[in-house]
Image (cartoon, rainbow, N blue to C red):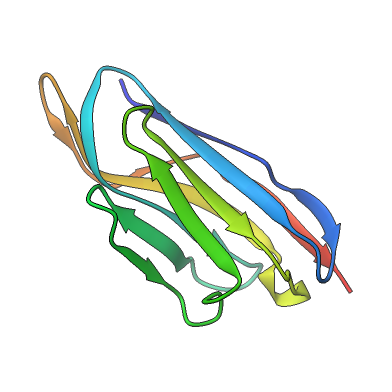
Length: 121
């Protein structure tokens, strides 16, 4: 059983910063992709940032230059440093892991429970 647990959401003023963290627990050998998605009220879930195990990254255009994704492969954790936050960044942020290799199976497209990020103007 592999679980993703997020932490670090909250309420901050525009221009502020937050750091989200996600830890994958279970008998994990490796994880191909770890990333963050978000879903604002009335909108579809969208990619924020993703990072491969080798270090390549992909960011949504709306967050480039403001958000930084990082991960620790040994600890199966991924982090999202969010700076210069804007009210439009308000959403529930979800951690995602894809290609999770355990000793028995490869698990695809796992999601955390989500953490609320609210940016006040």
